[in-house]
Length: 428
Image (tube, rainbow, N blue to C red; front, top):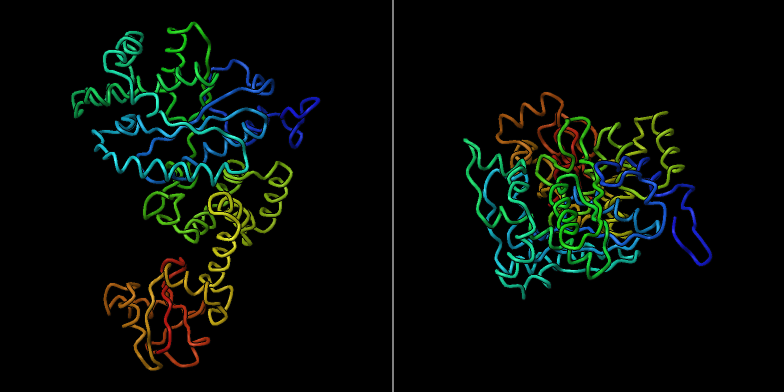
């Protein structure tokens, strides 16, 4: 719900607590009753450290939760961790992080801020940088104002500290050990200066966030709360969601192109797609229920995956990039004839997959090896003999190209089924 003029307005018939529950975004919280989120507006904050120049889809899950809070009338303060980024969160890390240079941190902060604007551009939020309140603070002031109020036993009980200090651990620096104090002070500062009474976070940030709640209580006698999103698990693998064979799925198009991003979502498993529609899109319950019902009637059409890919790519990359990614995908999976691809689509295809030139009569085996689809002539020959090679979506065992194989001078050569195992062959 949100407050509009004369009263509270319900969004899609759901309160925030109901929507969070339906979307599977309920994890740990200090609230005894989630319905408190359905009442008067709360000022909350969510932060990302600039440890990289892009967020990943792991961050995106929490970001979509933040969007739900905003849509229901709560006020968001979005933090870029310029100060915390100078140390790096040690939680979950077996070894010391390599410190970023100040130039790297500055670059990364700008990149994260730009992604905030892309994701939350149509929603009201205030952006802050914790470097602004740490840059003028002296070491002794920090020890007196923060360190004096944090019991060392509390810090030693953290799992990552025990792991690093254990018999097989590599140890931990004073800087990383103190990271939690910096984040706790963020919460205290925002509590005093911005009226922030809630931190929302991913499940991995629970311990750091609770430290802020405790510091606020000890320093001011006030009350603050934490609400965390659950870790999103890939049901097919049981592993943390958001990794591909190549690594993390980034929101930055220079790291994960819109086509690769779109394809990642297209390729998720059926069970996962149903859950991800709730977590990663703004589609309401009626729309999601209808999609899931249609998907289950004919899973082969992959309607859930198509809608998921379209909606998430639109959030991260915008409408025009999403439409182009969809169009490129249609050609890469041979649902559209490659010969009909326009100049812009061809430009993107050439960036996405290897390209080569060939003449009619030239060797398919050499093309497979030259584009990296086979590691050797022998492997290329085995692929052809095992019916694992296709021209424009049709299986072939031909060892030489024919003029009729090309469409408008183009041919999509593929090994197996994945679009990433394709190459564009163009007639010389």
